[in-house]
Length: 165
Ligand SMILES: [Zn+2]
Ligand SMILES: [Zn+2]
Image (cartoon, rainbow, N blue to C red; front, side, top):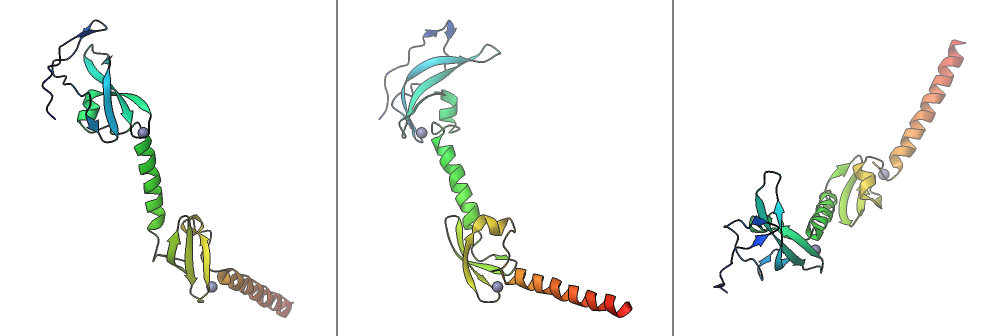
């Protein structure tokens, strides 16, 4: 699809269009389809750059700098960035399969939830973020043992005190 139509330099807002401008209409950059030429962007130093009205695959329209399109810096209206962020967030969570958090080993994961096995062989489903934040580090057995240990310590302390008295 070679475009033989020569882009005729125009005067837009009194600023000449840079000579390097090529006709991007009809071209696709990532999710963006260039629909038409938009008003030039004028930088503080007085140079102008071409801008193009694009339609994203998601249906939104956005005016993008021609150079951003050509350099691949912009390839969606912004929806792709949002999806990538969500993807990265999912990937971060998905990485913990096989990892150990205290007594818990992650067996499998589904969204924000993990199937974990405790060292005492109890299996449970817990929130991934509770594991990562350290809120949960056992099936509950550790808490019980800690409480028992505190209880024992108290009893010993009690007897020591009593013995001394
Ligand atoms: Zn979009
Ligand atoms: Zn346990």
